Every structure is written in structure tokens, then in C-alpha cells.
View 1 (cartoon, rainbow, N blue to C red):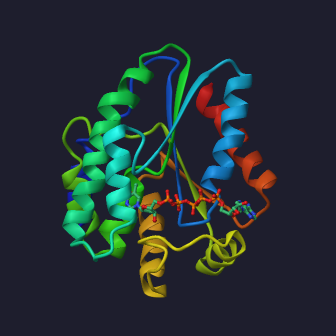
View 2: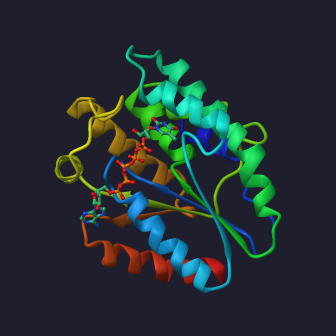
Length: 224
Ligand code: T5A
């Protein structure tokens, strides 16, 4: 298994555009991705970067239709069908928005969820397997990896607590059982072990300011 993952990793690349950066944020529901993205945007624009923030699934007209189709689905989707819908949204987002923006000098793309979500949700929690999902991404443009991924690590209890405080209606994934979430968290941790040079795990049970400080310090190194 380790060898085939190493082999599949060899098909992946990071953008080579000088002075442009690609960042993604990952974590289970309520881990604070949207909250932290606002902090990141401020830090980066203060430094003179042009910032494009996008979300997955979505971010393009076509992707937003797919987002609606998945998250509002009233029937359980086959894991492969689910996975391919996320990939379709991603390929379109890369082609239409991410790749062109990375050609702009001093630009940063911030993405709310990316490939690690598919690895954790569909690969691990839906049992497709990490290798299968890595294999599905190995072709251009899906094989583009961010320079840095922040994995905001919280427990299921913290996630449920934050969701309850927010009090919104549950979507397609938020109604899943405890076992699904345990696998999901395991999936993210496995990804952090497979891609240690890219994924930074942050204890996101801390205050938003503390989490943001860890990211700001790391960002200094990435931009340098
Ligand atoms: N999906 C997605 C897949 O299955 N496969 C894929 O390939 C992809 C791309 C997307 C769903 O699709 C799935 C995963 C998801 O289930 P979504 O609506 O985009 O759905 O869901 P989330 O990304 O999970 O959005 P959330 O809003 O739930 O999570 P966030 O953005 O991580 O959390 P945030 O910042 O909105 O914060 C949640 C609450 O917690 C508070 C905030 O104020 C807010 O009320 N909070 C904190 N409280 C205390 N301390 C902190 N440090 C806090 N940080 C935030």
C-alpha cells in the first residue's frame, strides 16, 4: 500500500509560478475554515497580494449547480457517483479560475476544501480507498497540489457543539453517524502522514486568534 501511494504521489505537482501561492484549508464541519480564511485574506492583502478565495464544491457556475445537487440530494448517492461529482466541480474550478489566477504576479488562491476532503470523505469515510481517489486525481489538471494545506483538527464533539450553536439545518453530510466522522478524522490524519511536507495540522479547538497566529507564523515561511 505504501509503495503504491508513493508511486501515485509521483504524478502530482505544485504550481511553479514565481511569487504566486496556492493554499487550502481542510477539516470536518465547524473546524473554522471560513473563520480562518477571513484572517488569511487580511494578512495577505496587507502584504500586497491579490487574493482569490474559492470554495469546494462550487466556485464556478457549473460547480455551484453540482454543489446544490450533492448537498441537497434527498437520495443517498453511490460513493463513486459522489466522488465523480466533486471531481467534476474541481476540474472546472482549476481550469476556469485557479490556474489563470496563479499566472497573475503576487497572487494567492485560498481554497476552502480541496483534494484532501475527497480523500477523507469519499476515500476513507465512504470506503472508496485512498489509493482509488489518488488514482482518480493523477491526470492534469486534477494533479495540482497546493503549496500549503492547513488541516484544522477538532474532535467530533467540538464539531457538534459548534454546529448546534450555529443552529442551521443539517445538510447531506452533517446527518452522518459517528462512525463516518471517526473515519473522516482518521482519513485527514492519514493524509497528513502521506503529505507531511504540504499539510500542517493545527489544533483548531483553540480560540480563533490562537489558530490564526499559528497560520500567520507558518505563512511567513511559505511566502519567504
Ligand atoms: N465534501 C467536500 C466532500 O465530501 N468531498 C469533497 O471533495 C469536498 C470538496 C461541503 C461538504 O462537502 C463535503 C464536505 C462537506 O460536508 P460546506 O457547507 O462547504 O459543505 O461545509 P463546511 O466546509 O464543513 O463548512 P462549515 O461552515 O461547517 O465549516 P467551517 O467553515 O470549517 O467552519 P466556520 O468557520 O463556519 O465555523 C463554524 C462555527 O464555529 C465557530 C464559528 O463562529 C461558527 O459559528 N468557530 C469557532 N468557535 C470557537 N473556537 C474557534 N476556534 C472557532 N472557529 C470557528
